[in-house]
Structure formats: structure tokens, C-alpha cells
Length: 204
Image (cartoon, rainbow, N blue to C red; front, side, top):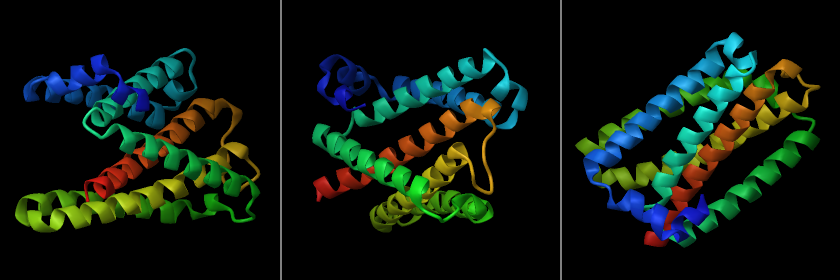
């Protein structure tokens, strides 16, 4: 992700696109992202069936990565590098704690699900504020990103313990694609929210 900011070719590709073309590309990638994600999450036959599980996982990873790459093309290069470093530290810390702590995060499944729903509607509320009271948007957006980092760090701990096993909820050996998918989503979401916080800090 970070090298994207130091590559004139890739960076220029996104920044030189007109608004219509850029939105068209992002919309198409979003469609691939959501279809492949829900196919893996909701359909056990797809999630566990080879080679369809790898095809969907590949499509999901590629579409999500390009979307994040497009976002970083409009960010400061050093903000991206700092965000990558912070994300690596967070992931290493959470992984270590999830593996060593006696706390069973998988028992908090219901609370984490509710928190995710509340976070989703909070995001919608912030989008409304952006149009109704734009003067309050920046502060609320920073709060939203900070909560996002915390929430997906908890999701990372939850998913790590599910993969490691020995807890209240654990993945079977047949759900290796599901484990990889959830870890990837958790880490990428942490990076996205950290990046927005770092970019905002540098702008101030």
C-alpha cells in the first residue's frame, strides 16, 4: 500500500482520473467487494468449496486492495508510512495479547455484534451531519475513526482467538478461508482508520 505513494505511475493513474471515471471504478470494485464478501460469509458451500473459495477470496482481496490503494493515492506519503507502522504495532500487540491473555474474547460475540451495528448507524449519522451541520463533521469523523480503530482491534482479538482455538468459539479446519478473510478485513480496517487519523493530525 505504501509504495503506491512513491510510484508516479500508479499514483498518477488515480489522481488524473476525472471524477466520473474514478467513481465508476470505485463503484465497480465495491460491487465485486460486497458480492465476494457476502458469498464467502453467507454461503458455506462457497466458503468451504475448493476452488470457488479461493476465487472469491482472490476477488475480494484484489478489489479491497485496489480501493485502499486508490484512497492512499490522495494521502501524504509519510502519513501512509506512519499509518502502516502504527497498524503493524497494533496488530502485533493484539495478536500477542489474544494468544496469551486468559480473557476469552469469543464469549463477547453478542456485544461485539451489537457494537458493530451501533458503529454502522453512527457512521450514517455522521454522513447526515456532513450535509446538515458540516462545521461539526471533522470532530465527529475523528471520533468515528478512533472508535473504528478500537472496535476492529477487538474484532482482531476475537478472530485471532477463533483461529487459534481452545476458546468458547473456534473455527474448524474447513474454515481456513473464513479465518484468512476476517483477519484481512480487521487489519485493513484498522489501517484505514489509523491513516485517516494520521492524515488529520498532519493537516493540523
